[in-house]
Length: 142
Image (cartoon, rainbow, N blue to C red; front, side):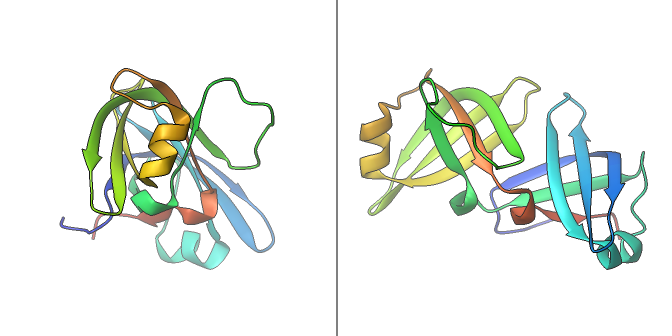
């Protein structure tokens, strides 16, 4: 599969919480990293999602926000994934930060040069990758 989004989490559906309009779907990778997505009930049905089914969660790197240090606030983002910076790619306008999660998955975030400096990011830094469940696209094998 070729896709332009940098973050692709392959795993299995481990939970579905259905509501009257939307559902919350958890996808857990083989290493144990869990991604939460919200999608319409119609999408759950059209994708035939069920616990145990193979699925993929896709997140654009520009939708990921990074948090460094001790937070002063709690955040509403359902996906708050702690990890370690393993790469910093310098761009003309923005930088690409690569984060390794405990289960072995990687998360890429595109952030400004200023954010890298303000957060004090370097390889080995501890960070939390934040992204909304509504920013996770869910796919299933064709």
